[in-house]
Image 1 (tube, rainbow, N blue to C red):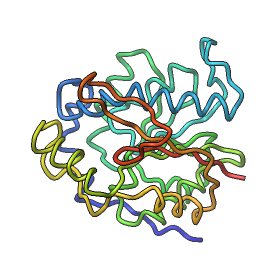
Image 2: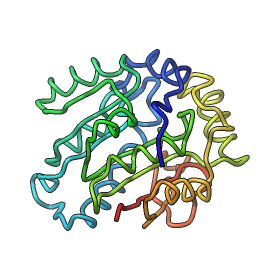
Image 3: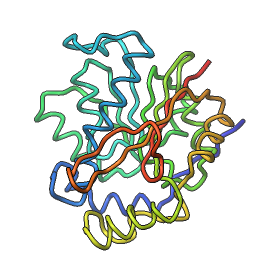
Length: 247
């Protein structure tokens, strides 16, 4: 299987570059990610610890693991992974995000290698990682299968791939687009395109076709009463996440 040279959608890149300066503002345009981040981190750290037999009570439990945060944005996931001891590379096709990410990491005393590049370019260069974080990216690329093949190539044997995205159904349209973009105005209108959302069945198929083996999937569920996110074993109706491994 061959990946195309790039699956980057220039229109999608431009959307996020326009918001780059607000990455670390918890009340700015990335407020939904700040709210979701503790839930994402809980899932990610639990999966990595289980796969690599790491003790999360230790100071730097992910020491010795090389981790790629593809579509890293301002570094909302790269930074906590670095604090946990991982050797982190943050990659983003939107170059405007990276100065913000670099400055924030430096101010936080963290060593993170940020690159303006794509999954395909890194795969073609032979880069490999123990863990690839692929969070909220696949619904923004031009060719999801080619992109997933590139992510698979970036994993070492026995590596772990964690991928989250948004389901495609009437509820996700109401919540992720009408609710987040038009009612709550958490995101600029047009940030997401409903037809690009991916159902769990479709994502599992993409994962398997890319050469990975799915091992887990969970939902991220928002409670409007407690105003908090939680992980669900059953509710994958809007936001959801998967874990898969490479033989």
